[in-house]
Image 1: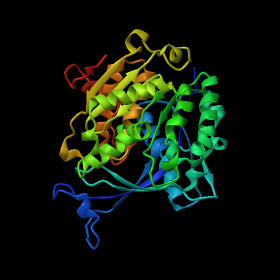
Image 2: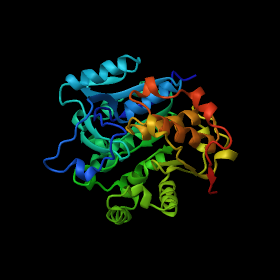
Image 3: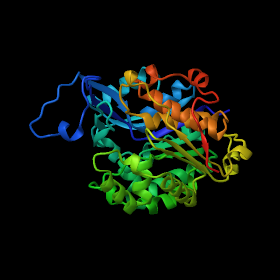
Length: 378
């Protein structure tokens, strides 16, 4: 029996989200950022953000034993992060540094508009394998790592620390999982050859859960530029055909990952698997190989109720958490992506993931035949 179900490590921050008024008008991003304009908001929300906090709190909400491993600064924002985590007994593995400030993000998320992030990585630029608790990791069923493009030590030197971390954890017999963030093309991480890094890392990665735009920018950069230019003021996700999503899945599987989950926001979720028998050789997982081997599914997003919408921050992390939770419980692939899609939708209704997110038993009641059409592609 492992001490923890999941260790979540990597990027943690505090999100500062302006409270836009709902139901009064339709927001236009170009007008919102027009020089000299003024938009009245309803307060400023301080919430934990990043893969460590979002995925970790969702997994705890889903009744999993969770250990968080991240780094915050010895500052005001760091205190907000620690106090928030302590409320849920999740601060044990969070390290504190005086070398740099806590990472924070300003999240522009008006109703009906995809989110815009202004991110300050802070001390995440110095977070490294030296801050990881490998003893705790060895006592877990699954290790989930989030946002290498925001973690300088893990993408420097062609991803050497990322490779070391995943290869060592694989030797422990722990299932490995990786999430991503969108590299800023104008930053240092945007100049990295991410395809080369993924070709090194994914053979040691059992589960990879990027967003659709992240996968497209990394694996097919020319196509990403083409689609981005063609999208204009429309959502880029609406311009990417299913055939391209399937091609992305095949490219990522070819790099070595066993399970690929591509989160496509309001469109849905794509799942592609190879042979999962290696995962079952580890102590943390027992998947039905007949159900899981070489499968391909697409599930449309669960439609949200507009009057319940709060914001979309953390929806991808929450979807990933539900998928991981379902896998740890030994669910089928189609049920696992249904949990992921539903949790992503439910996240839209949350200010606080741990307090407001629907629990596992509530989701089980909602996931029933005919609740949302899962399309079998293979």
